[in-house]
Image 1 (cartoon, rainbow, N blue to C red):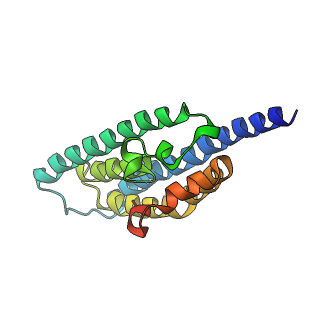
Image 2 (cartoon, rainbow, N blue to C red):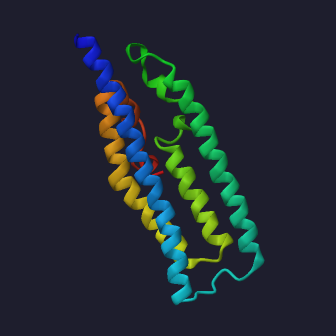
Length: 167
């Protein structure tokens, strides 16, 4: 009976993680939308040169690539049983270098979008969204993973420098 409760608790946590991730991703969408609205009322023409749109496309592609790499690598980690976890279990793909590469990729991608659509306020709001995501949603995600994976996850997170934790 105890094992069944533990399995249900783990399944519940998976749902909670997706709920937290959904809200953190939604913040980036809202940042871009509000940025475009602000640009309509307060036009800013900082990025008129076509080079900014080309750079923006490259940035979008880099962010997309990072997200794809992170999602592929996290699928590998999900196949490992909790009892067999080590710090190395969390270090697949970009997770070896960044604790939250999907969020970093989303930030890079939406930042590039701001350049492509010539939206100064979108760029400003995306930066603010990234900071809010790190302060609010990543902290929630880390608490959920700490409960799920215990000391092994804490050891993984603690191996990153303070600078890397903000990426």
